[in-house]
Image 1 (tube, rainbow, N blue to C red):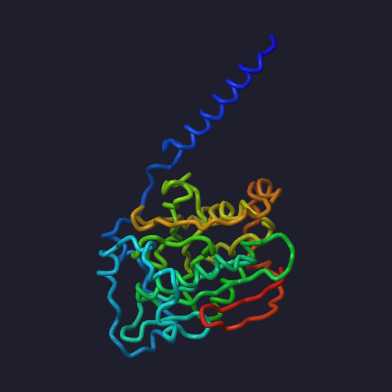
Image 2: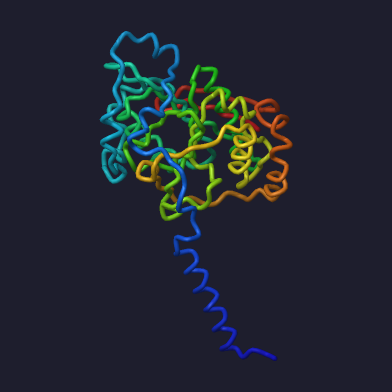
Length: 318
Protein backbone atom coordinates (compact mmCIF):
# COMPACT_ATOMS: atom_id res chain seq x y z
CA UNK A 1 0.00 0.00 0.00
CA UNK A 2 1.43 3.36 -1.06
CA UNK A 3 0.71 6.60 0.78
CA UNK A 4 -0.38 9.55 -1.28
CA UNK A 5 1.67 12.76 -1.07
CA UNK A 6 -0.91 14.55 1.10
CA UNK A 7 -0.92 11.57 3.52
CA UNK A 8 2.85 11.78 3.79
CA UNK A 9 2.60 15.52 4.38
CA UNK A 10 -0.02 14.95 7.08
CA UNK A 11 2.13 12.34 8.85
CA UNK A 12 5.12 14.67 8.74
CA UNK A 13 3.02 17.52 10.17
CA UNK A 14 1.69 15.30 12.97
CA UNK A 15 5.25 14.26 13.80
CA UNK A 16 6.45 17.85 14.03
CA UNK A 17 3.46 18.90 16.17
CA UNK A 18 4.01 15.93 18.47
CA UNK A 19 7.68 16.90 18.92
CA UNK A 20 6.76 20.53 19.69
CA UNK A 21 4.17 19.46 22.26
CA UNK A 22 6.68 17.11 23.88
CA UNK A 23 9.29 19.85 24.11
CA UNK A 24 6.76 22.34 25.48
CA UNK A 25 5.27 20.20 28.24
CA UNK A 26 6.97 20.19 31.64
CA UNK A 27 6.46 16.49 32.43
CA UNK A 28 9.69 15.56 30.65
CA UNK A 29 11.73 17.50 33.21
CA UNK A 30 12.89 16.42 36.68
CA UNK A 31 10.16 18.49 38.32
CA UNK A 32 10.87 17.31 41.86
CA UNK A 33 14.30 17.28 43.45
CA UNK A 34 15.78 17.95 46.87
CA UNK A 35 17.22 21.40 47.48
CA UNK A 36 18.45 23.71 50.22
CA UNK A 37 15.83 26.39 50.79
CA UNK A 38 16.58 30.03 51.50
CA UNK A 39 16.31 29.74 55.28
CA UNK A 40 19.03 27.06 55.31
CA UNK A 41 21.53 28.55 52.88
CA UNK A 42 23.69 30.55 55.29
CA UNK A 43 24.02 27.63 57.68
CA UNK A 44 24.95 25.33 54.78
CA UNK A 45 27.81 27.50 53.45
CA UNK A 46 31.31 26.41 54.45
CA UNK A 47 33.34 29.21 56.11
CA UNK A 48 36.74 28.76 54.44
CA UNK A 49 39.22 31.47 53.47
CA UNK A 50 42.75 31.87 52.17
CA UNK A 51 45.57 32.93 54.46
CA UNK A 52 45.62 36.59 53.39
CA UNK A 53 41.94 36.95 54.33
CA UNK A 54 42.36 35.26 57.70
CA UNK A 55 45.05 37.82 58.60
CA UNK A 56 42.70 40.78 58.14
CA UNK A 57 42.04 42.55 61.43
CA UNK A 58 38.47 43.68 60.79
CA UNK A 59 35.02 42.50 61.78
CA UNK A 60 33.58 39.49 59.94
CA UNK A 61 31.16 40.24 57.12
CA UNK A 62 27.50 39.34 57.62
CA UNK A 63 25.44 37.54 54.99
CA UNK A 64 21.94 37.17 56.44
CA UNK A 65 20.55 40.23 54.67
CA UNK A 66 22.24 39.35 51.36
CA UNK A 67 20.57 35.93 51.33
CA UNK A 68 17.17 37.00 52.66
CA UNK A 69 16.95 39.92 50.19
CA UNK A 70 17.33 37.68 47.17
CA UNK A 71 16.12 39.53 44.07
CA UNK A 72 16.27 39.46 40.29
CA UNK A 73 19.20 41.62 39.17
CA UNK A 74 20.08 40.71 35.60
CA UNK A 75 18.03 43.49 33.99
CA UNK A 76 19.84 46.19 35.97
CA UNK A 77 22.09 48.41 33.82
CA UNK A 78 24.55 48.46 36.71
CA UNK A 79 25.53 44.90 35.79
CA UNK A 80 25.97 45.45 32.05
CA UNK A 81 27.57 48.75 31.09
CA UNK A 82 30.99 48.56 32.76
CA UNK A 83 32.78 47.35 35.87
CA UNK A 84 31.81 49.74 38.63
CA UNK A 85 34.65 50.92 40.92
CA UNK A 86 37.19 48.82 39.02
CA UNK A 87 39.97 50.18 41.24
CA UNK A 88 38.65 47.97 44.06
CA UNK A 89 39.66 44.86 42.09
CA UNK A 90 43.21 43.69 42.58
CA UNK A 91 45.50 42.53 39.72
CA UNK A 92 44.50 39.06 38.57
CA UNK A 93 40.77 39.71 39.04
CA UNK A 94 40.85 39.30 42.82
CA UNK A 95 38.50 41.05 45.22
CA UNK A 96 38.08 41.04 48.97
CA UNK A 97 35.97 43.46 51.00
CA UNK A 98 38.08 45.91 53.00
CA UNK A 99 35.62 47.01 55.67
CA UNK A 100 34.90 43.47 56.87
CA UNK A 101 36.54 40.04 56.75
CA UNK A 102 35.03 37.72 54.14
CA UNK A 103 33.85 34.35 55.39
CA UNK A 104 34.34 32.62 52.02
CA UNK A 105 37.23 32.46 49.51
CA UNK A 106 36.30 31.21 46.06
CA UNK A 107 38.23 30.55 42.85
CA UNK A 108 36.05 30.94 39.76
CA UNK A 109 37.54 28.85 36.96
CA UNK A 110 36.46 29.63 33.40
CA UNK A 111 37.56 27.48 30.42
CA UNK A 112 37.87 29.61 27.32
CA UNK A 113 38.68 29.89 23.64
CA UNK A 114 37.67 32.56 21.09
CA UNK A 115 34.56 34.01 22.70
CA UNK A 116 35.64 37.61 23.18
CA UNK A 117 32.17 39.16 23.23
CA UNK A 118 30.92 36.70 25.82
CA UNK A 119 34.06 37.11 27.91
CA UNK A 120 33.60 40.88 28.08
CA UNK A 121 29.97 40.49 29.14
CA UNK A 122 30.89 37.81 31.70
CA UNK A 123 33.68 39.80 33.35
CA UNK A 124 31.65 43.00 33.53
CA UNK A 125 28.58 41.31 34.94
CA UNK A 126 30.28 38.93 37.34
CA UNK A 127 32.57 41.48 38.98
CA UNK A 128 29.63 43.80 39.62
CA UNK A 129 27.55 40.86 40.82
CA UNK A 130 30.09 39.13 43.06
CA UNK A 131 31.27 42.18 44.97
CA UNK A 132 27.75 42.66 46.30
CA UNK A 133 28.07 39.29 48.05
CA UNK A 134 31.04 40.43 50.19
CA UNK A 135 33.05 37.30 49.42
CA UNK A 136 36.73 36.94 48.57
CA UNK A 137 37.09 35.69 45.01
CA UNK A 138 39.44 35.51 42.06
CA UNK A 139 38.60 34.76 38.42
CA UNK A 140 40.94 32.32 36.65
CA UNK A 141 40.55 32.25 32.86
CA UNK A 142 42.12 29.12 31.38
CA UNK A 143 42.52 29.55 27.63
CA UNK A 144 43.28 26.69 25.25
CA UNK A 145 45.95 28.03 22.89
CA UNK A 146 46.29 25.07 20.50
CA UNK A 147 43.92 24.14 17.67
CA UNK A 148 42.93 20.73 19.04
CA UNK A 149 39.25 20.09 19.81
CA UNK A 150 38.23 22.11 22.87
CA UNK A 151 38.93 20.16 26.07
CA UNK A 152 36.77 21.85 28.69
CA UNK A 153 37.37 19.29 31.44
CA UNK A 154 41.16 19.45 31.11
CA UNK A 155 41.02 23.24 31.34
CA UNK A 156 39.04 22.89 34.57
CA UNK A 157 41.73 20.55 35.90
CA UNK A 158 44.44 23.07 35.04
CA UNK A 159 42.48 25.91 36.64
CA UNK A 160 41.91 23.86 39.79
CA UNK A 161 45.61 23.06 40.02
CA UNK A 162 46.54 26.74 39.73
CA UNK A 163 43.79 27.89 42.12
CA UNK A 164 44.98 25.51 44.83
CA UNK A 165 48.49 26.96 44.42
CA UNK A 166 46.93 30.26 45.48
CA UNK A 167 45.32 28.53 48.47
CA UNK A 168 41.67 28.68 47.42
CA UNK A 169 39.55 26.14 49.35
CA UNK A 170 36.47 26.45 47.13
CA UNK A 171 36.31 26.03 43.35
CA UNK A 172 33.49 27.09 41.05
CA UNK A 173 33.67 25.54 37.59
CA UNK A 174 31.95 28.11 35.42
CA UNK A 175 31.07 28.32 31.72
CA UNK A 176 31.66 31.76 30.21
CA UNK A 177 28.17 31.92 28.67
CA UNK A 178 26.17 31.51 31.90
CA UNK A 179 25.13 34.34 34.22
CA UNK A 180 23.19 34.19 37.52
CA UNK A 181 19.93 36.11 37.59
CA UNK A 182 19.33 36.25 41.35
CA UNK A 183 21.43 38.27 43.80
CA UNK A 184 21.72 35.63 46.54
CA UNK A 185 23.10 32.74 44.52
CA UNK A 186 26.07 32.63 46.89
CA UNK A 187 29.40 31.89 45.21
CA UNK A 188 30.72 29.70 48.00
CA UNK A 189 30.94 25.99 48.71
CA UNK A 190 28.68 23.85 50.84
CA UNK A 191 29.29 20.38 52.28
CA UNK A 192 28.46 18.61 49.00
CA UNK A 193 29.33 19.63 45.44
CA UNK A 194 26.56 21.94 44.26
CA UNK A 195 24.86 22.23 40.89
CA UNK A 196 24.30 26.00 40.80
CA UNK A 197 22.42 26.56 37.52
CA UNK A 198 19.57 24.06 37.98
CA UNK A 199 16.99 26.65 36.78
CA UNK A 200 18.43 27.61 33.40
CA UNK A 201 16.39 29.64 30.89
CA UNK A 202 17.61 27.33 28.10
CA UNK A 203 15.58 24.56 29.78
CA UNK A 204 12.62 26.82 30.61
CA UNK A 205 13.95 27.08 34.18
CA UNK A 206 13.39 23.36 34.77
CA UNK A 207 15.94 20.65 35.56
CA UNK A 208 16.11 18.24 32.58
CA UNK A 209 17.22 15.23 34.65
CA UNK A 210 18.33 14.52 38.20
CA UNK A 211 21.92 13.69 37.30
CA UNK A 212 22.60 16.88 35.36
CA UNK A 213 25.74 18.41 36.88
CA UNK A 214 27.27 20.98 34.57
CA UNK A 215 27.33 24.62 33.52
CA UNK A 216 28.15 26.09 36.91
CA UNK A 217 29.13 23.86 39.84
CA UNK A 218 30.88 24.40 43.15
CA UNK A 219 33.15 21.86 44.79
CA UNK A 220 35.79 22.13 47.49
CA UNK A 221 39.43 21.77 46.49
CA UNK A 222 39.70 18.71 48.73
CA UNK A 223 36.71 17.02 47.07
CA UNK A 224 38.05 17.80 43.60
CA UNK A 225 41.31 16.14 44.57
CA UNK A 226 39.45 13.18 46.11
CA UNK A 227 37.64 12.40 42.85
CA UNK A 228 40.87 12.94 40.85
CA UNK A 229 39.40 15.98 39.13
CA UNK A 230 37.74 15.58 35.76
CA UNK A 231 38.61 13.32 32.85
CA UNK A 232 41.22 14.61 30.37
CA UNK A 233 39.85 12.50 27.52
CA UNK A 234 36.78 14.45 26.44
CA UNK A 235 38.04 16.27 23.35
CA UNK A 236 35.08 18.18 21.92
CA UNK A 237 31.62 18.89 23.29
CA UNK A 238 29.61 16.61 25.55
CA UNK A 239 29.94 13.94 28.21
CA UNK A 240 32.46 15.45 30.62
CA UNK A 241 29.81 16.76 33.03
CA UNK A 242 28.12 13.35 33.25
CA UNK A 243 31.56 11.83 33.82
CA UNK A 244 32.09 14.27 36.71
CA UNK A 245 28.76 13.22 38.22
CA UNK A 246 29.79 9.55 38.00
CA UNK A 247 33.04 10.34 39.84
CA UNK A 248 31.28 12.19 42.63
CA UNK A 249 28.71 9.43 43.14
CA UNK A 250 31.39 6.71 42.99
CA UNK A 251 33.08 8.36 45.99
CA UNK A 252 29.71 8.49 47.79
CA UNK A 253 29.97 12.27 48.16
CA UNK A 254 26.61 13.21 46.63
CA UNK A 255 25.44 16.54 45.21
CA UNK A 256 23.06 19.31 46.26
CA UNK A 257 21.24 22.34 44.88
CA UNK A 258 19.74 25.58 46.18
CA UNK A 259 16.05 26.31 45.77
CA UNK A 260 15.03 27.23 42.19
CA UNK A 261 14.44 30.90 43.06
CA UNK A 262 18.17 31.16 43.90
CA UNK A 263 19.39 29.07 40.96
CA UNK A 264 18.11 30.88 37.89
CA UNK A 265 20.67 31.51 35.13
CA UNK A 266 20.62 32.80 31.60
CA UNK A 267 22.65 31.35 28.74
CA UNK A 268 24.21 33.71 26.21
CA UNK A 269 23.86 32.73 22.56
CA UNK A 270 26.86 31.00 21.02
CA UNK A 271 27.84 28.66 18.24
CA UNK A 272 27.88 24.99 19.29
CA UNK A 273 31.21 23.25 19.80
CA UNK A 274 32.18 20.16 17.80
CA UNK A 275 30.74 17.04 19.40
CA UNK A 276 32.95 14.43 21.00
CA UNK A 277 32.20 11.28 19.00
CA UNK A 278 33.66 9.07 21.74
CA UNK A 279 31.64 10.53 24.62
CA UNK A 280 29.24 7.60 25.01
CA UNK A 281 32.02 4.99 25.13
CA UNK A 282 34.06 7.15 27.52
CA UNK A 283 31.11 7.62 29.83
CA UNK A 284 30.48 3.88 30.04
CA UNK A 285 34.00 3.40 31.39
CA UNK A 286 34.04 6.53 33.57
CA UNK A 287 34.07 4.75 36.93
CA UNK A 288 36.73 2.30 35.78
CA UNK A 289 39.07 5.10 34.60
CA UNK A 290 38.52 7.48 37.49
CA UNK A 291 41.75 6.96 39.43
CA UNK A 292 43.94 6.80 36.31
CA UNK A 293 42.49 9.67 34.30
CA UNK A 294 42.29 13.15 35.81
CA UNK A 295 44.52 15.31 37.99
CA UNK A 296 46.90 12.38 38.39
CA UNK A 297 47.45 12.13 34.62
CA UNK A 298 47.29 15.84 33.77
CA UNK A 299 49.92 16.84 31.18
CA UNK A 300 49.94 20.27 29.56
CA UNK A 301 52.19 23.19 28.71
CA UNK A 302 51.62 26.55 30.39
CA UNK A 303 52.46 29.06 27.68
CA UNK A 304 51.86 32.15 29.79
CA UNK A 305 50.37 33.33 33.07
CA UNK A 306 49.44 36.99 33.21
CA UNK A 307 47.66 39.12 35.81
CA UNK A 308 45.08 41.18 33.93
CA UNK A 309 43.05 43.79 35.76
CA UNK A 310 39.91 41.61 35.76
CA UNK A 311 41.24 38.03 35.64
CA UNK A 312 44.24 35.75 35.98
CA UNK A 313 44.99 34.55 32.46
CA UNK A 314 46.45 31.06 32.07
CA UNK A 315 47.34 30.30 28.47
CA UNK A 316 47.91 26.60 27.85
CA UNK A 317 48.55 23.97 25.23
CA UNK A 318 46.78 20.69 25.80
